[in-house]
Structures are given as C-alpha cells and as structure tokens.
Length: 553
Image (cartoon, rainbow, N blue to C red; front, top):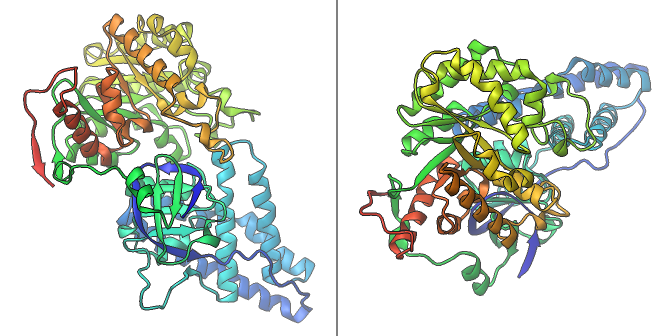
C-alpha cells in the first residue's frame, strides 16, 4: 500500500478500481525552419487545427450542459473564446510568417508565454486559469499532429472508460469530458489542480469525491489497481489494506443508509447552499428547509458585468418563487480572495485574501451595495428572505453595514416584516466580538471555510500547507462552542454553511455543541438528515424527536 497526501477538493469517500488517463503533455515539440513556399501551408495547418479544436470544445460543452449543468459547460466555451481571441490568433500567424517556424513551435511558444503570466499572478483563481492555457495548447498541438489522448487501456476489452472507476490523471482536462463516461465516474485523483480547478468544479457538480495535488500518483497507479479516495482528509491510498479500508470507510448500518430522509428532525433544519437557479430547484426537490446561503456573486461572475437593480430583482425573485414559503438567505456580493470580478478593475493587491474583500468591499462601494439592497428589499415583498453580510471584521463594521441597509428597506413599505439581517462569522476577530455583533443582527451564520483559513493562517489552495487546514482541530471546536454560547445568550439563531457541515460524521458533532441549523450542498441533504436522526436515535442528551418521516430510496 502507498499513501498520497493531497488537497481535498470535494468531500466523500470511495473505493474502486482506477482508470488511468494519459495526456500528451507536449513538453518537447519539434521545431524547424520553413521556406517561403511552406508558410501558407503552415498557416492552413494552423487554421484547420483551430477549426477542429473549436468544434471539439463545442461538442464537449453541449455534452456537459446536458449531463452536468450549464454553468459547468461554460468552462469549455470559455476555452474556445480564448483560443479564438483575435490577438492570440494574430500573434501565432505573424510568428509563423515572421520567424519562418513550423506551426507547432510557434503555438508552443506563444501559449507558454501566456501560461507563465498566469502562473505569476497572486490571485489563486486566475493562477489556476493557467490550466486553460495548457489545455488549449495541447488541443491545438494534438490536432496539428493528429494525436489523441485517452485512457491508458483504451481499445482493450477491459477498458471501462471511467464507468464505476476512479479517474487518475495529471490534471482534469476538457478532453477527458469527451472520453469518459462521467455520469458513472466514482472519483477523481489528480496530480495538479486546486479548489477552483475544473476537476473541483465538475466534481462538486456531480457530487464526486475528489483529491488533487497528488504528486507522482500517475507514475504509481496502473489501470484496474484498487484506489481509495478520501475527499474529506485529502488522502488517497493505492492498493489499500483491509485494515485501512475499514478505518477510512466507517462500517454503518446498511438499512439506515438505505433510507432517504425527507424531513429534518424536529428542532433542526437542513438548508441548501446555492449559487444558481438549478441549485434552488434541486433543493426544493429534496425538500430542503430553505436556502441557508445563496452566493449572489456567482451571477455577476457568470455575466462578467455588474447587474442592474431590475436584473438582480428578477433573479432573486425566481429563487424565492422556486422555494415557495421556505426562507432564502442571500449573501451580499462577496468578492475578493478566490472570487475576483475582473470587470471591476480592482487595484492589484499583494495579498487579496487579507485585502479589500467582503464587508470592506461593500462599504467601499456604496453604489453597488445599495443597488443590491434595493433589489432585495423589493423581493422581500414576495416572501421571507434574509440578508447575510460577508466577512464582517468587528462590531463597528457590522453596525455600519446594518445602518446602510435600514433606510433602503424602510423605503419599501412592508419589506421589513419579511426581511432579517445576519452576520457571517468567518474571521476570528468577529467571533471574539460575537456578543456585540449579535446586538445589531437577527441571526448569525458560520462560514467555516474561511474561518479555518484565517484561524490557522493557512491557504487551503496551497498544496504545501493544506494539511494544516484541519476542521477537526480542538481550537476550532472551542471557538464554535463559544459562538453557540454567544448566540444563545443573545437569543439569536446560529447556522453553519461551510463545507465541514456536510462532511461525514460532522452533523452529529455540530448537534452535540448546539448547532442545529446546517446548510450544505443539495446532494448532501439526505445524508445530513440521516446522521441527525441517528444522533437522536442514539439517545443524545439534547432530546429525542417524537417522530421522523422517511422513504425508501
């Protein structure tokens, strides 16, 4: 057995045979001079490769839209747009003419320069977009040389094309989407890619356990080798022992896990995290108790522009309408850190995670802040909603935010009755002032992802230090217990919406310290409800619910 430590990009645990995906990395390519008569021929070769590559990306995008979702499909259309960018195409064509070099050599050089620029960026999200550049270069070179990538066992009788297998690869690429039966893929294990990588985005959309940053795994694993992926800890085991399997994958009552909980235990609520309308639709189908976190910034990122008040109102209205009489918590625009909005032309920061983001950004951009609040105040006339302030640092900042909202809400008669204001606890300084902050808001929400990052001064996207991103650390749980005490004293409800709320076994631990409102990815709602019911069935001291509602899966 060999153990690999990497970066957890999507939770869950899975044991299955591996499918090794081989990528032609084109680390070295042929370079040769061409004569005047060959220039036009090389240009035609490049044009054909560009057309073929564009068609492939369109096909992949349509397939992903049908099987995964529209948001995820945009990844591949974005690659197509980059590849066909006028300035890049012109640079390649001029390089072939001016340098009198073959198309492969010029393409390799032009895209390598762009990749190096992305690698040098401070922002993690933009840095990871370097993978798009590498993928575009590979696709063009593959089509020029008429070479194809695929599974290492492609063409052999035992090849499953990823079905009921764990995909092991250097990194997730668009080409993999065309080759694999991703509707039945069990997990991902890649050498490269962070939480904003394509592997992470697709894995989360499909609900697949995934780990990246596994250096050397493609040199160790062979097709059909047994692999155990632990998407909670970020570990992957090659040819694990029976002892390791039993230790990592807890043996549970099969009958209990065969039940799909369709109602939360009394006194608790399981809410959904959402970013788009489709998430809200899935949450409604799973009978979520509401939406505990709607990430409004995703709308702006998808449109690549600021939205008007009316445009925002229409989108928020649709979400509230989809959820019926169940409450929706809209987090105000949370940009900065790993969520940049390039069209805002924010000044470059040496450390964006500690810079102008969250509440600071909102207070520094009153026009953007007030337009969003006005849109939400109008929506409050249609149903119960909550407004959540992101990355609050201290009481002074929280009071300033609340004061900035009150006037606009009062200007819409009837809105105040359906609207609550809440603080997001994701910075240690805010947690230490929780009692004071609760005086200004109606509820609190714990953003565990950033809270862990700031509490332990660890960049969870950094493979070198990701081991210190530890949601089981006793100090974190003491801080959470202190927040529960502060909310109880203030008589204000407290929920948690970070990834740890959906990790296996954590629902019981959160209930044990008094957190009874959990907001998770829609797909995890049945699992979390089942864990909650098991907690009460085990005779938990907080009391047992009188009944439960269940249905066979």
